[in-house]
Length: 129
Image 1: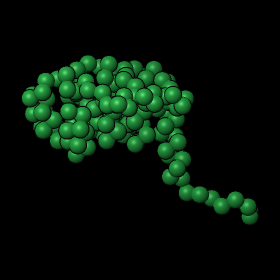
Image 2 (image 1 turned 45 degrees about the vertical axis):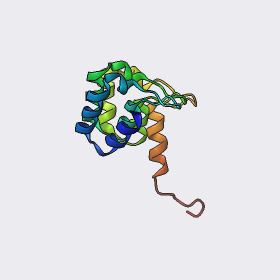
Image 3 (image 1 turned 180 degrees about the vertical axis):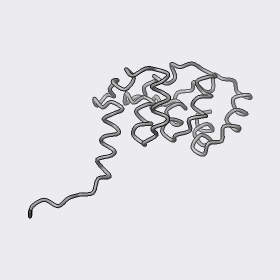
């Protein structure tokens, strides 16, 4: 199920995911991969807010707190990829404390975004004036 949801959620095919879940049942949305990721991780990473909202309606808000094997949560993945609307919605569901949760390497959602943003800053050569 996770493979089907993952493929469809990246493209925003909520209708297809709904159909698959109608065939397999809502428990399919709780499937966990070997690395601990759920469909909520993938949806958050790819900014499919309507799909994440639907997944939470079908399961529970706790899906938003699920950490993978690296300790990364859906809000961290959304922050990493710059999905501001996704981050805002998750915070509205879980509260501000979800931004303070750290992954296994000690990064919070804010640090994931800051790290990613720094990678895109233009490099200023050292030396000279």
